[in-house]
Length: 69
Image 1: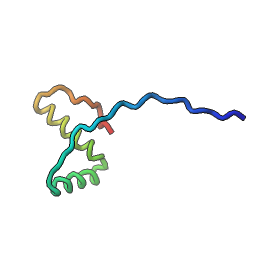
Image 2: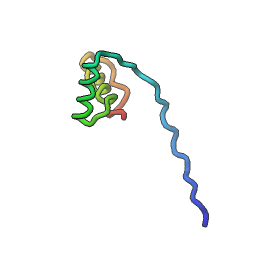
Image 3: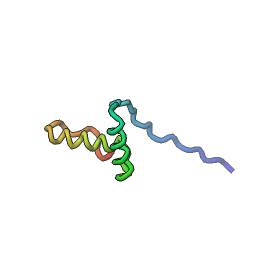
Image 4: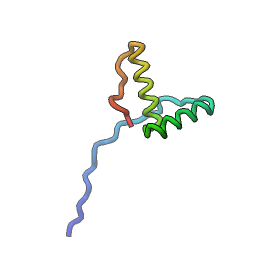
């Protein structure tokens, strides 16, 4: 019996660190609460907020379509 060999899939897109956000513990706790209540990853919450802010300010469309995670 011949073993099947998995074919390599497409290379994943390169990912880089976009921001490093530091703040008070109250901010961290709020984001954690939002994460637990919405079941959205923290990065997604930040991306959605940036997308909404960019629309409000008339910036070009946010470069990630959807939630990005």
